[in-house]
Image (cartoon, rainbow over all chains, first blue to last red):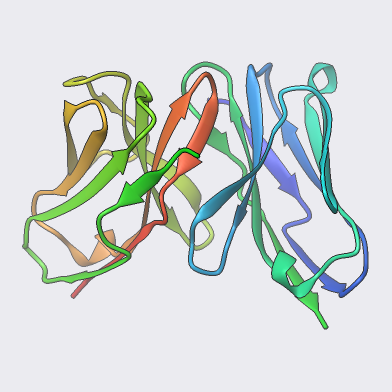
Length: 107
Length: 110
């Protein structure tokens, strides 16, 4: 199956700092999503972004499908941003997940 | 908003019990999935379904079965629960490559 790698695996930030999370994938995909797993374990949709750039408040994402990577930007981080961030790719009806980036934002 | 609902947030069962995890979605999605999540191993696909009464094995189907009698409901069955099935179980549905997850079920087998 397709390989999905996320970096960094762990990240600790001071509140107010900015960060960039990366997702690399090994083959062409039709779709890509970013999720945030909250402390209770639920995966919350952040972006559906097979290509291009999207922004939602302090978060934005860019996918360069031809180069097989996606970036998630978090600006002015808050303690509520803490948790694990996953990217998932969908080449054809199945989803392949990276192992996640664990983000801790300290006040 | 799409809603995917799992029947229990926390569950404690005894070894050897038959366990049912239920998942219901309200958006008429064709595709439904069951994953388990363990520390250091990420999300692993157990089973998925593209249509009613249809199922496909994922990466780790051993010890599990599924049922999809209605489009909106996808059940995961542990025929005889074992301690190595203690995990976080996540259900998802999808349409056109866009997936939505339930809140997860933390199952502990003692």
